[in-house]
Image 1 (cartoon, one colour):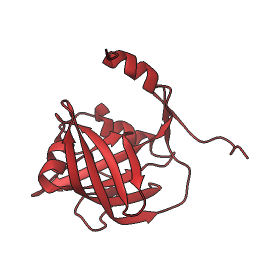
Image 2 (cartoon, helix red, strand yellow):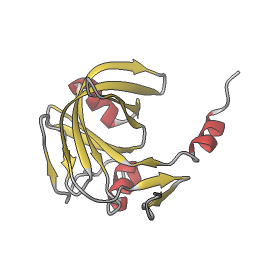
Image 3 (cartoon, rainbow, N blue to C red):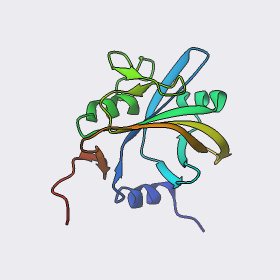
Image 4 (cartoon, helix red, strand yellow):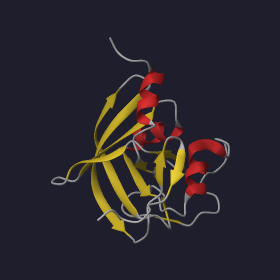
Length: 163
């Protein structure tokens, strides 16, 4: 017997994670969304996974294009996280007014983040209401700064490092 979705949400609120924006494009249409379901799976080859809700534009674009970009947000980008989480309206251009760039794909990456990866989907697994995308990282870039952290529905910054 499984637990309920609400019970799992209660548990996962105790898991602190970074915050990232997944973006994709297909035939001139582009979109992005805030995620915390992003992780590295293997280093050689460089494989990551993300999970996206099936009813989102970003998921649809990733399924059609078989590629996506990820921007790992800095502690100064809380408003960007909120914007891409849909708190500004889903019909608006979430990239409006933001400085963006590309690596290999045509997925927008957001300037000011800590790190960026461009990925090509090598497998996808339909999980009912969401899809797990397994992807190879084909390009990357890093910068300096503190990460934006998410814990129990709140944003945090790193404090003093534990030595």
